[in-house]
Image (cartoon, rainbow, N blue to C red; front, top):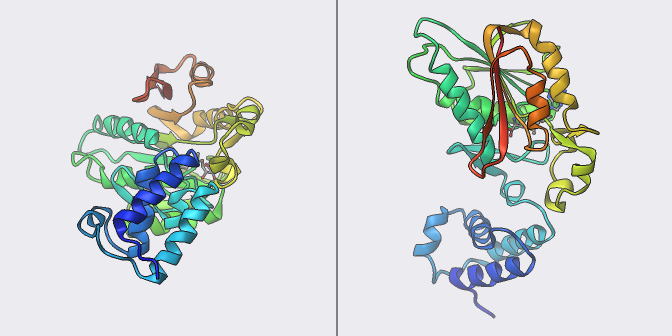
Length: 288
Ligand SMILES: C[S@@+](CC[C@H](N)C(=O)[O-])C[C@H]1O[C@@H](n2cnc3c(N)ncnc32)[C@H](O)[C@@H]1O
């Protein structure tokens, strides 16, 4: 019978993924093989000459086939790391993106400005996997004693995953998850509102690569004809839901960042923040 070592499997698969135009062929091959073998990715390197069992190889073959047809690695293995935090993901939730870590960083900077005897209440609108709320709870500034985060979503399936991620990361007592269409289902007023809501326009959606369009939930991506529709609806709720002096931080695309910023004409310190790639990615504003 033909034998395949870890090293050979990785080399063959990397080459195969490259030919299929996959962006990170070696990394994806390593994640899929280490998951199949139930070992850490780094341990592949001390197991180069190991021959995975037939059961492991057949699961790996299945993963390789599905990934080559577009299925994201994160859905295949059921996990994605965000802000160095492990999160369970499945096709009911968007796979958290690295650029969203900027939103967490900026929100933490704002939270650090609260005095230690204040109890800011934060809302994460459109929480999905719970990525933002959980990253905030895990990294909550020590100077601010109490963590109170309300995380809402319009998808009850997403909320179930977010809740299990909060348990997984030991922050389930700091976050209240709640089904709500934007802020219409919550009665609180907030000090900080943070969101990565859908911001893709219909024409952009049509042009998305298949590994996104065919696998990630449309409800997490598509906003409407312009891309600003859901953010505009949220903005109209802010006068009632954001405390005076409170901040709102919104992730958006460079295509709509200027239009989103104009929604905050008359607010304090409106700014557009660029991501690491130099794209306008966040709009931040403070209510008078
Ligand atoms: C782009 S995903 C972001 C998920 C997560 N916050 C993240 O950054 O990975 C947008 C999320 O907003 C939710 N959503 C869409 N429309 C909504 C609405 N009207 N009210 C509440 N949540 C909504 C979707 O279900 C989805 O989970």
